[in-house]
Image 1 (cartoon, one colour):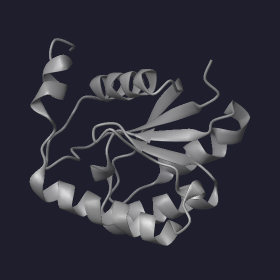
Image 2 (cartoon, helix red, strand yellow; image 1 turned 180 degrees about the vertical axis):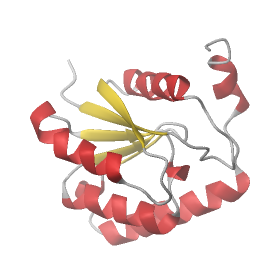
Image 3 (tube, rainbow, N blue to C red; image 1 turned 90 degrees about the horizontal axis):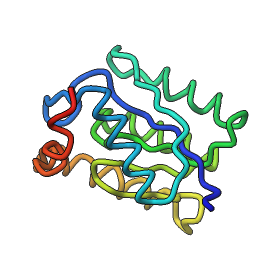
Image 4 (cartoon, rainbow, N blue to C red; image 1 turned 30 degrees about the vertical axis):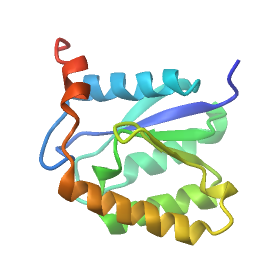
Length: 148
């Protein structure tokens, strides 16, 4: 039985090289990611569609303790620009929250890292590089293509 519990953090706007993925599909991607990682998925909250907003993320942090949540699963590291992503990651580190990126299939436990600032810089760099060379994997979209 798993002891990890996670909120999903999804997007209400196009986030991956201008592509929009419906929230229903984002939720399924996050849920399936959690199942594969043996994480108890609680529910997702979409970020509001204001530029550079992290209001929904802040709400997830507020609700974290009352729901015994240890992790937050982002649909993608591409949801935010690097400066806002850095701020969010720093907050996760300060709050002892593990972060995951479902599309990239990556997990970061910065709290167990000896040099968290180096890990954060590496994560931001990888996110910036990914935004220039990746698209949502066709196989991932095909898996959910029949869902409307």
